[in-house]
Every structure is written in structure tokens, then in C-alpha cells.
Length: 292
Image (tube, rainbow, N blue to C red; front, side):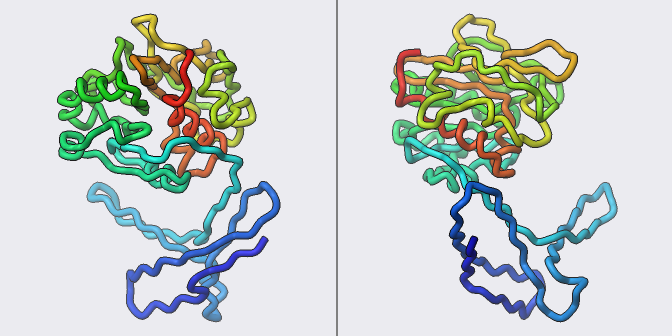
């Protein structure tokens, strides 16, 4: 492996200064690559040091130090489509991951949804808890459904269903409920219920190995189909519990597709989990494949 930096040395002449560094990696093996920044100032206690701060009013300020490392993952990843509209939710790093995949990402706020022609987007993705946090989402239900019906692709990441964070708008073209079901064991076995479905076949072939290496959990706030219109694609369970098939619900609607998923892409994509990137790419490509 060879790593080339530009610039290859940094000099900081003031506190809290930020300097971007570009780098390229030449590697021949499919592997994880980690490298770090060396302070190189003659003090061994400062080698590979990064600093983080936790600052909230309700706890004492905390400063801690860790290795300033970068994680790079070589992926076998194919994508289809170019332009994604992303409706931000409670905050996640999925848009940055989508840009790393090669997509052009347009963030859609209240005003942006109002003025944009949605037909320009190969897919529109809602951030985590977008329907919990934005009252104005209800204004765009008809516009989003028209987008799907005319050939668009709407992917809704998890929303919560409780008194603290109720869903404030209609979501899908057909009724479904958001439950509190989750699978917290990141190694829980994943049963692919319909391996022939395009979400598991185009542009990447999704198999059991794509669910290896997930972190923290599998999925949260599953959907429950109350209309009989959704295809249930994955079944899984925590040890000793009943299997549930609500983590990935998909339905065609008109010429397009609608997806509700509790799969924790917001954790897996920033962590560089290959299978999560590949499955997200397939969800984005759904409106290019018909017949299911």
C-alpha cells in the first residue's frame, strides 16, 4: 500500500486552526486500511494524538485524546443514478456517505422542497426521524407521492412512534404502522426472504456476507404492514426472541417505488460497512428495475 498526501506536512500557527489534507491510496488487496497523523515534534506522548471535546450545559466539560486515525475501506460497489435529494432529519452523516459513493446530493429543506422540481432526482431519501422533527413534511405528502407515482424513488429511514416524538405527517402511499421493534444484536442472523427481488440483485448482488461487520445494532423502529401492499424482504431477531420482518418494507406505486427501512444506515455508512453501502446503492437504483 502507498499513501500520498497533499500537503505532506502541516504547520499550525494558531489554535483551533483547520487545514484540509487530500490523500490518495494505491492498494492491490481488498482490505481495511488505517493510518494516523504523527505529531513528529520530538515528544513521544503526542504521537498520533487527536483531541475531542464534549460540551453540554448539564455535564462538566470533558476533553479527551485519542489516535487521529483515518479508516479507508476498499469496496466492491456499483451504483446506478446520479442525483439524490436528501431531506435532513434529526442529524446524521448519510449525505456525506452518499457523496463518497459518487452521488450528487442536494439537501432539501422546507423551502427547497417547495420550489424544486422533484423529477430531477433519481431518489429522495429522508434522514432519520425526519417525520418526527419537521411539522412541514405534511405539506409535501401529495408532492412526494406524485413524485413516486411518476417514476420517482422515495426511501424513508426510521421514524419513532411514541409520545415524545410522534410522527407528524403521512408517510407512505399505503398505510403501515411504525412499531418499537428492533434488533440490537449486530451479529443477528439475517434471513433474506425474497432473494430474487431487485433490491438484492441490482446493481450489486446482496448476500448474507453483506450483513457481516455491522456495528452496534441491526435495525430499529420496524414497520408493520397494515395494508397488505408492502413486500417484506428481511427477517431477523435478537437471540431468544421472535423473528420480525418489518426492517425493510418496499412497495411499487405507480411507476415508482417507496421504501420504509429501520436498518441503521445512519450508523453503518459512516462506519464504512461495505454491505450497507451496497444495499443502499441498490435501494437508490430501484426505480430502474420493474416487475415486483
